[in-house]
Amino acid sequence: MNGIALSVSRGIARVTGAALGPYQTAVIRIGFSATWLLFLVRELPHRHELYGPDGPWSHDLAEQLIGDNGAFTALMWSDGRAWFEIVYALAVLSSVLLLLGWRTRTMSVLFMVGVLSLQNRSVFMGDGGDNVLHLMSIYLVLTRCGQVWSLDARRARRAGAARARGERVVDRVGPALWSVFGFVLLTMTLAGGMDGDWFVPALLWAVWAAQGLWWAVGRWARSGEPRILLDVVADIVHNGALVVIMAEACLIYATAGWYKIQGSRWQDGTAVYYPLNLDYFTPWPALSDALAANGTMVLLITYGTVAVQVAFPFTLFNRRVKNVLLAAMMTEHAVIAVVLGLPFFSLAMIAADAVFLPTSFLRRLGDWAARARGRPPARLSARRPAWPTHGRGEGGTAAVPGPRAHEGGQDRKDAGGPADKRAPSTRT
Image 1 (cartoon, one colour):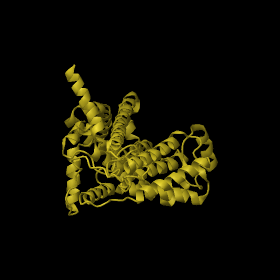
Image 2 (cartoon, rainbow, N blue to C red):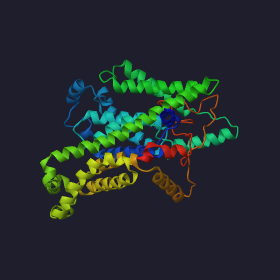
Image 3 (cartoon, rainbow, N blue to C red):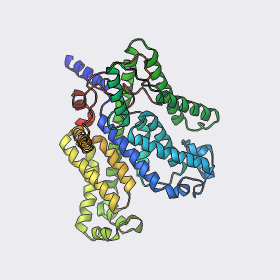
Image 4 (spheres, one colour):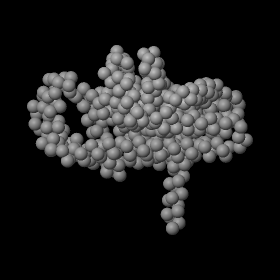
């Protein structure tokens, strides 16, 4: 019994003691924001036909569909061209800032709003990767995805150094953003723009209120206990969202693999052969023809794809086998991007796969990138920072209670320390 109790207490300590997988969440933040940004930039000349007033899926049709399914989209607030341009521009801007890791909590919320607004406006636009992006944009709001490889992390390090020198750190941008977005939320709610779907408006208000509470506790709490409590809650939310992201990726591959087994097209190889002969999926006709003419290659691709997708969720119990299949799946998606001309679907899937990458590999990758820029590698803080009593360095971003100095701030364990080695993403 003592052994069971000890194991349970250790498990609870792991979940509540740190935001696990900082490098993995940073990778999926960068991956999904880059995927959405590249898609928006590529479709910039065609944006009015895809999601705007000139599209075949008119504003009236979109209103009828949203009236039935209750989906959220800010584009339904007005059918004017100017409003569409504003929403599209904000979607691009939030993607850029989330990619850079500037005010990641606020930008993750704006990123989600941009994704949902455009995709729910025209539901028939996309190639499969839009479904993954749709879900992951919601999960990212709940994660501390700016702990490393972000402007937030750099600002947190500078703020910590300034406090160590006895200087007072005041964050005016955060409270300003919090106030502006609170005003926008209140205005849209009173104007009826939040009617219909309840989940997204509730999430937006909960995130905004939670960050206000976070700032208030840091500003007026005399002791550190309330702040530590909020920090534990934020860790639990982050780790729960990380588990959901990992489970989502496993479900995608498991369902895809088992459905393929049941279909005759994947049993006789035509599921791979036919797309290679369709003009829509042949950006490189010579390459597609060469693959389609090689029966052995079609056989290997067909059965290899099914085997990898069915087996991957079970390989999470063996790190070495998992890493091999992970590399195989990423390579497969890269091939799909080139051969079938589906780059954004492939990028979205590679970004989802990245949550399973080993921490040691990601740290080496980050160190290599830092040295390439002539800078020393950045590490997470190895100890809990002392909370400033004025608490102005943390408020202002629309978020659940964020990390110590900010949402991209310090963690309690060093990247190479025990917490990093105990993270689920490093053991799967």
